[in-house]
Image: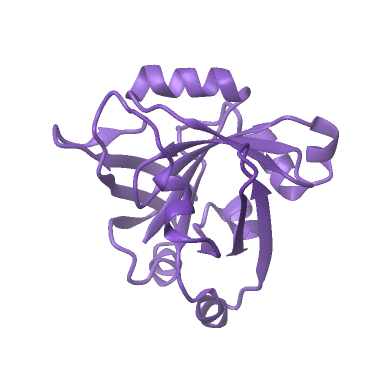
Length: 203
């Protein structure tokens, strides 16, 4: 299933205000990414979430592939910069697609340490392919479950349109609902969230 969407912003507080003003969705402080020079804010959506990412330590970010990517994506065309797919068997995904996993963690402002493993992140940077994540936390600590009051009700991700080499995208996103793959230049073409009033387009 879709785990989260990454939106790179120049400034976390300003980016959060802009996101709330545009889409009626509030966020909570997420914490720092050790070793990457970045920090985030979380827009909880229940089973999924939007991650607002900003560089907070430029020198540290320059030494990290993720930090350099986040810095370079600020101001890029479109709102959503990357898509993450959740799995409960990352090892099987790595075997199927020839990937290697990396363990990661961050500490929330309340001191709770969140742990997860990812795979395919480098290809997300280079080719706009979704990357894969497996969480190692209780359900109640999942970022999408954070307590926040939005100005509108959102029930999850309705549709994501990805552009690239269509056959490869389809193999990559095998069995993941709500993803449409089209042929074209590599990019996240569009994302819409499901609301009772109809799709909310993040554009």
